[in-house]
Length: 259
Length: 218
Ligand SMILES: Nc1ncnc2c1ncn2[C@@H]1O[C@H](COP(=O)(O)OP(=O)(O)OP(=O)(O)O)[C@@H](O)[C@H]1O
Ligand SMILES: [Mg+2]
Image (tube, rainbow over all chains, first blue to last red; front, top):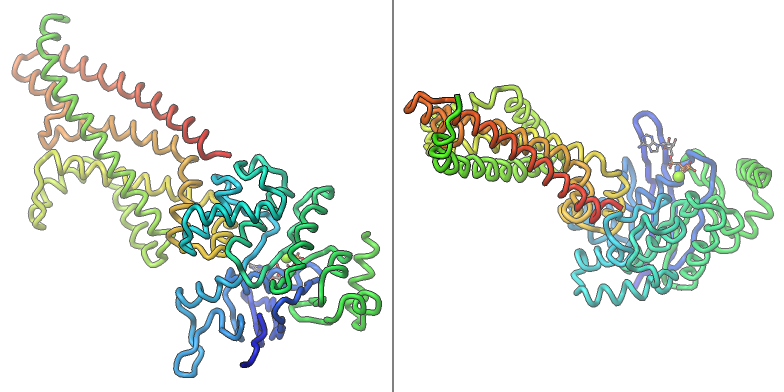
């Protein structure tokens, strides 16, 4: 049996009007791989994650998840636009954590985590509660399970958001600058949770981050984006010590200077 | 000028009419709330309905309620829609205010951040589940005061139904007046009734508002 890559972008193009944001992007991610996406502002990092989460349409190429096209489906050997059912089936393998948390403000931490397992997976309330409690425990939030998002700090909200995404048992987790909206002293607790997740060998993780230290320590691979293309990619230690591309060098120098 | 005995004598008749007025208000407003929400939800969920619905809403809002009442009651039958006066009246009032309410709901929907929809997609929630569980509970609390204003407005327009002889308060007062040639008492009592009820419902709406805020607005 052929082992498909967990995710593959094949010649993926994304445009906003005249602006080409992603230009024939090719990117293959293996099962369990932890990939850090870095690059200057506007280089298309968020767009990559949003397309994989089906929050953006795709203007060219194909995205596959375990070999299955995401926004297309195969009919008579042809790729046609996917219907709702197909998209939902493939999308079920993917979870996402947002920069601005996006917790549901009218639900407690526990209810946030239980909503989708009950409504989408059809779990009983007891099963969903058990699963959610366990995950809230994992992110260190079980003592706050009955709090509303407005009663939680940013770091706590983000940890609940991580638990909420995990409750759907995704195979791929997407993180888009999940610590950028946090006060500096709260960043550590969220990174700690992500580190814990990294120990799960099966979970594939894609992370857009401006934290070079964390990328270096955590990722199996770093992809440096520039103007909608991968300029350079590689093993983190090598990449950070000895970047090959002039643009990556410039970028790393600028980031270093900024501290 | 003012005859207490007469006022007391007509009170039971007016009370019966008041029941009709309240009935028109409650049922009409229920229709307005439900149909208004459906219209607003369709606009959000089914892009194809956006244009026809905004056309319909504009049509209803730019013609007088009185004409709509007449239309439903007198012109309806030639389209095979024959209704008794009370039903036609309730329906006309309900649909008229549904148009206004749908705009209120629309503002409520637009006030919910896009990130809420996106988080729902990321959790693979269906679109209608998202609407029901995530969007509506956030969209409605902020518009309760605006909806409440329309309840009071609707209530105050129910006398229009006297034009198709629905036995609500105004019609009842007019009949008493024409039979007894005394208008002071019936018209004053009806006015008082509207005053008291309007104040009472404004108060009730504020109660609902604080209740909802306690429950939802976090
Ligand atoms: N909805 C949109 N409409 C028009 N242009 C957009 C839209 N979303 C993103 N863009 C543009 O696409 C480009 C890539 O955006 P993207 O958000 O992917 O960048 P990014 O690498 O995540 O940047 P940052 O580090 O600032 O988050 C930018 O030039 C941005 O202005
Ligand atoms: Mg971004």
